[in-house]
Image (cartoon, rainbow, N blue to C red; front, side, top):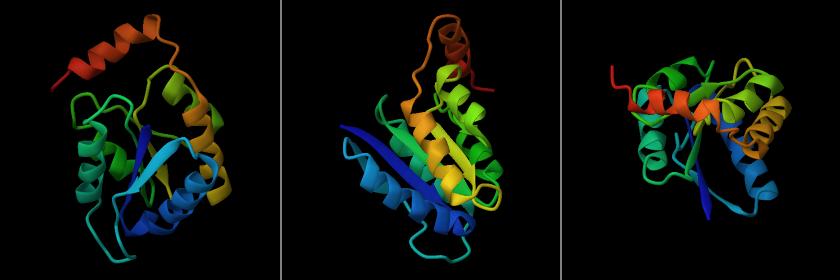
Length: 148
């Protein structure tokens, strides 16, 4: 069964919980695991991004969703790891392209920049989109092999 790991800092706490509940209700074929933050207290976003990254790296079909205030910090932290392709998305097109062209294995969202209903839609688009492979496979291989 495919797994999605959710993580957030305090800024993304509420949106992460909303997405968790939404996914549990709508995606019965996917196991959802919440990696925290366990309560809305000030924490350092890199710590929670790292928890999700470690889980996503364990299996090719594992995915992650990270939420902070803007999504920027989470995406910056996650993308420091080989074979992680974290995409910060803002609209339907970027959510679709994140998977179709970039095969993003972590979706990053900003709780202060993305309304909950739009966030749900973006998650659905990302999950329902298929990686197109072809010419994109070569580019993904370059990303996955790069260790700066």
